Length: 265
Image (cartoon, rainbow, N blue to C red; front, side, top):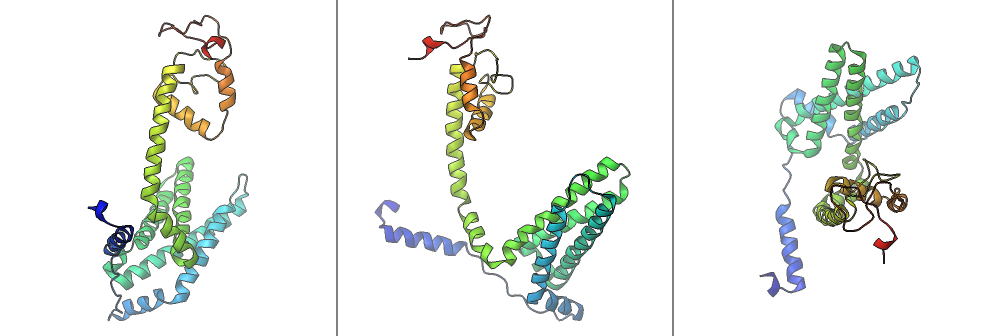
């Protein structure tokens, strides 16, 4: 039926579809319970989100200050600060769940916060229960990942970041379609590469990591070439003479083959 619609009518139809996808937010009512009402007033205060944003930035700065060869004193101070920041994040989650109850989990941002807090608590428990130093360091790295993930909260807290982020989310389906098209083109050229250069013997840049012996290897190699990394060297290495190779284009498939000048017009 779209073939019978004008451009303006199609635009109106798309606008209606967009409006139908918008879900109204449930109005938050102040709880009657005294403790919950106090938590409700705290988390809805405009300075609460600003304070959390400052803590997130300070936590990120501490994580960014870690470097190889840090002294024990610096590591102890950073661990203390990370513990304080993690406690603030856990307290924020407790206050919001107390204030909003089940409505807390209706927000995607709140669900992200909850997952991060669970990760932080799990990291604390594992670090306290694990005696292996190497495993404890791995757990600490995972906990740091959960802490740095809170930077995504700034998208919601900072209004100027919200519009480009929402735009990026809106165009993700289109980006996926473009990615599928590029993957198809990469697959086609990979098959062509296997057919043309699949039996070229290894030498120089043509080795067991960079070759056209299989479609998988060819796709990885073309993906590397797409970044501009070493494609010209690989091209020249294809022309390097090989020993014990057939130089006839009508070669035997189970024997290495070398390109020569006769293979090019």
